[in-house]
Length: 430
Image (tube, rainbow, N blue to C red; front, side):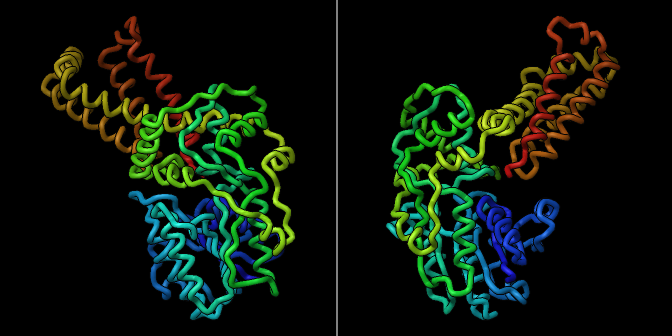
């Protein structure tokens, strides 16, 4: 069977692709950026399509030639400068479903979210439900699967956040969070494969709820034990501080970063995600793994501990570096402007002293802004390294005495350079 998987580079999509390939199916993976997936999974055929921009059936029809079934795993948590819930969940997905109907691709599996049919409270839930309803109206053999928090060996978004929380010396207890019935990625992928098989039930929506109800704190505590760290001390987070954290996540989203802690996550977590796993087992015969059983089967490695410990440090590193460059640039253009001009004049730059300080300040601000914005962060980090080397080289020629300065202005550049290299190593989201 040839299966087209939309959102094939995401957490669920990549697991579905691997499962289908292992079962001997031919997979066409659709992702916004296919350079890295093509290298990682060469067994699949990859198509670079932004589902948010492919909003006409004609955008999909050529890609459906010879395709037997479609799995739509594409989804975004919240609107931002980079993402649109409506464009992905309604416009793009609706165009794909219409194209399937026209092309005669009858079998369509849609990954939705548990609870979207129970009075959605966010644009994520509302658009997911609208996309589900668009599929239900089609003359197709559709199946809608509704998990919520999906966990597995790979970690991204909310699943990565849980590991990051587990690494903290104290475990923050966020206010107003409901119970969750987390599911394992292997069970979700197996369910997708089940419903793609000939003769499987169709035209149904199925909640994928795990076998136990857990709080966010309980999930993070189990991950902490899995990672081999002692029982943490619990700290209640004040509502105002939690609200600030969610708003900061929103701001990061508008800069292009896909922060898992955003106001949409707050509203969805407040509602919780629970359901009856009985129908899932009855229809498919799949016995859902509990979190404890799943973790028992894959012992944590040092790589897992590194990831968990670095996860919540990553935004601190990038925010710190961006602020460092922008603030130093602003300081050199105003309160330290005369000092900088004097220093460069001392080195013999003459009339070029003032323009040099202005250019340097503007360059620092530009580097900081590039690091802050997700799409240019990598280039900003490389630019920061280049500028640092140039500063040291020029300073060594013009004011070599600064190497012997008790405050070590040149020596302090070395750990800054190292931190930029660390940031380059962890810049990827998945």
